[in-house]
Image (cartoon, rainbow, N blue to C red; front, side, top):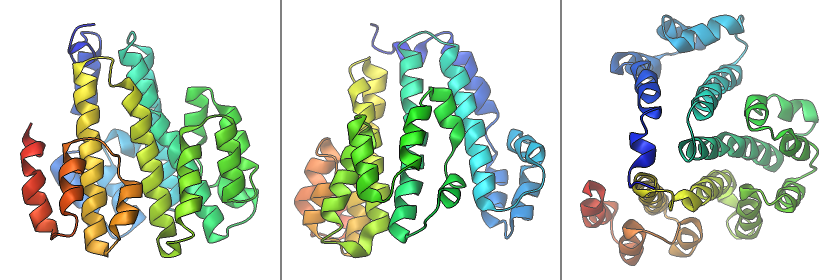
Amino acid sequence: MSSNYVIKLTALGPRVRGLRARYLSKDKLNALILAQTIDDAVNVLKGTEYGEVLERLGKIIDEAQVTNEVRSHVIRSISSLASSVPSPASTVLKSYLMRFELENVKVIAKSLVRGLEGGGSIEGLVNVTIEEELGRRHVLAAMMSVRDVEDLRNKLMEIQHPAGSALDSFLKISKQYPQYNVMLIDTLIDKAFIEYLMRLARIDYSVNKFIKELVDFYNLNVILRGRLWGVSQELINELAIRSGAVFSTAVKIYGESPTRILEEVAPYSHR
C-alpha cells in the first residue's frame, strides 16, 4: 500500500473537495455562534445545505431536534462518500461513523445517570440514522432495553462494543469522583472512539499521521482541562491515552501551570 493512498486516492479527492466547498463560511459560523434563539440560528442557515435540512424538518420543536436532523445529514453524507470509494478509504470512513453511535451511548448513559426514566425520554435523544447506515439496529435495540448504566455496560461488553470498556472504567472511577460523572462519561467514550480508530493506523502513513495527531490533541485537551479544574494526576492518568509525545511530555510536568505545559508540548504541534 502506498504511503498516502487514502488521502491521495483519486476517487476520494473530488468528493472531499465538494464537501469542503459546502462548508459554512467564517461569517456564517460567527453569526451562528451569536444567534440568541433557534429561529435566529435557522435564519443564519438559510441558503446553506443545513438550511435545506431544517426546511424539510418543518416546525422546529427544540434544540435536540435540530441537532439530530443536522447530525443525520452529516451521517448520510459520510456514508454516501464511503460507499463510493474502494477500500481502505471506505474502511476508514465507515470506522469514523462509529463516532455517532458512541454519541448515542453518551446520551443514554448520561440520561441514566441523571435519573431519566422511560423509553420515550431516551428515544428522543438517540439518532436512529447512524444505526440504519451501519446496519446495526441490534445495537440500538440492546441499548434501549437497559435499566441502568451497569446494565448498559454489560450489554455493550457482551457484543464487544468499544463503549463497553469505557463504561466499565466509568463505573469504577465514578465511585471516587462522583462530582465529575458527566465529564467522565464524555471523556471516556471519546477516548474509546480514538482507541477504536487506532487499529487503522497501519493502513498507511496518512491515516497513521492523522490518528497520532488526534491522540495528541485528545491528551492535551484532557491534561489542560484537568489542570484548570484541579483534577488529580491519578484521574488524568486514567483518562489519558498512554501514547504519543504530548502524553509522555505533559504528564511529567502535570503539576506545572497550563502555560508551562503548552510551552513544552508546542514543538509537537508543528510536526
